[in-house]
Amino acid sequence: MHWEDSIEPTEYTARTGKFGYYIKSRDEDGLSPFRFQIFSEDTPSRPILEIVSADFLENLNDSFRELYNLAKGAASGLSSKLTAEVLEAIERHRANPS
Image 1 (cartoon, rainbow, N blue to C red):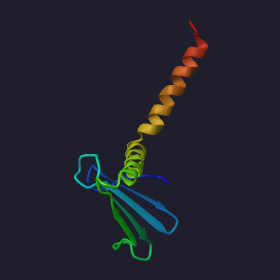
Image 2 (cartoon, one colour; image 1 turned 90 degrees about the horizontal axis):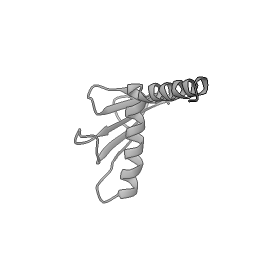
Image 3 (cartoon, rainbow, N blue to C red; image 1 turned 30 degrees about the horizontal axis):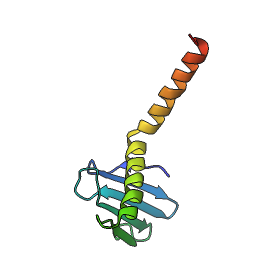
Image 4 (cartoon, rainbow, N blue to C red; image 1 turned 30 degrees about the vertical axis):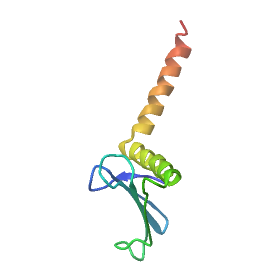
């Protein structure tokens, strides 16, 4: 699944096959509650599922927080940049272990 930035800075979208996914920090602060939606390619303007996490659903908040952070990192390219930087550091250390 490839996450991308959406219109707002705290919104992220992804597509897989016939479905689209959307996650957003409801208050635009990167924290819970989160809004998560699933769309069908047949009805792209109307979600087939919408969940808004709430502060009293801690397990759900934790799951959506993890998904939100994953989407944010993937959309920014941070994950691949960080991986590349770590691999380069390992190679430098192998070449010069002092």
